[in-house]
Amino acid sequence: MNQLLFETIETAGAAIRNKRISPVELTQMTLNQIHEYEPRVNAFITVMEEEALVQARQLEEELLNNIVRGPLHGIPIAVKDILQTKGVKTTGGSKIFEDWIPSEDAAAVQKLREAGAVIIGKANLHEFAMGATTENPHYGSTKNPWNVTRIPGGSSGGSAVATATGMAFGAVGTDTAGSIRLPAAMCGTVGFKPTYGVVSRRGCLPFSWSLDHVGPMARTVQDAAIMLEVIRGHDVKDPATVKRNVPVRFDSLGDLKGVRLGFYEPYMFSRIDADVKWVIEQAFRQLESLGAEIIPIDLPGIDEALNALKAIAQSEVVSVHEPLLKKYGHLYGDDLKYRFEFGSDISATIYLRAQRRREQFVRETIKQMNGIDALVGPTNVQPPFEIGTMVPEMAISNMFTLGKTPLANILGFPALSVACGFTTENLPVGLQLIGKPFTDHRVLQIGDCYENSMPWVKALMMMPGEGSAASSNK
Image 1 (tube, rainbow, N blue to C red):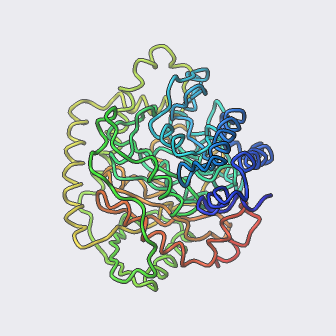
Image 2 (image 1 turned 90 degrees about the horizontal axis):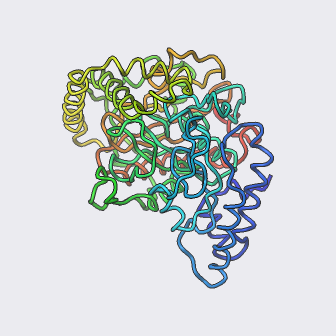
């Protein structure tokens, strides 16, 4: 194993710019890592070996001519296989699109390429991004690298696993109810869902158009910020994107003095595993030792809002897939068929009522967060369960029972998951921060300060199970 594959984007990028390693060499090292570990974890649907090496050679030639596109120049990045890639098949994790080759890149992929990222492969996912486990009946289940009998979380499970195992320096995922943050938490990495509208969803197969987000997954908060800086921005072809400039990059903080974090215990600690709770409580103590103040707050109407999210997501996804269902209904997995059955029973009246509840909840939450920098709590409240134990009826409830991520989606607020420790079974736990709209940089800044204060974070920058990260928890 080459340790450079587990360095930060910043460190690897500096090595390329200083010509200590070439883009071709780094890409080949990454491909070698994929050849060695991919059979164990099934993180990819398509490995873009030839395409990646062609990209790397071009970037190497540019480097020799003193052309550097930016911090991602020559850095191998994975892309969730629900985002279009020009000339490379995009399956959405489905048999329906198993042979589809798009004629253009998704907006985020296009921006990555322009910034010099090497697209190393298309990451495995829960079918059509509709699930929290990445147990894919068509392309095989992705396995958690900390324990290959367990789920990695989902739906961006392949993206999290590729990042955790050094098969990519980062990845782009999607998040409708937690699909970036939950797998990041369960695989010991970082996942960030930006404010709704900060990153274009053009070229992304939709799940729920009013809830879907595209965002970065990485091994450190700084790396996530580097990626987000590249993919953010207004897109005239995606009317949901905002025109305002949303700053992302930040200066690291030495402490968290003056930072106020809101904590709503009845929601954040409901149905939490005792082991996970212990880890989160230690993270809270660390935040306080850095100077942050954790303040109990109320979130009135949260239960109704989360029920509204279910109604909105399931009715929107039925409308998206209705044309496909008539022709290809038999090709969907059983858990998706259950979702469609549930969504088909939601009337227009229920849908519109849910959207009104959502708007009311957003307004009320902004009031509750007056004087608060971010909400704080666990990302996952349960450790990952065994692969193969899910039944279709768990399809909708999984994300709500495994973690506390859906809250940020119904709000549309920026949300970060950062690794904060391990259970007694050496399974990662994530700390979640949810900011106010367009305070993406502030959320990242707080998470970065916490991350840099933890002595075991460097141990995460190596192959899961080969370091001392887990043993330093308790």
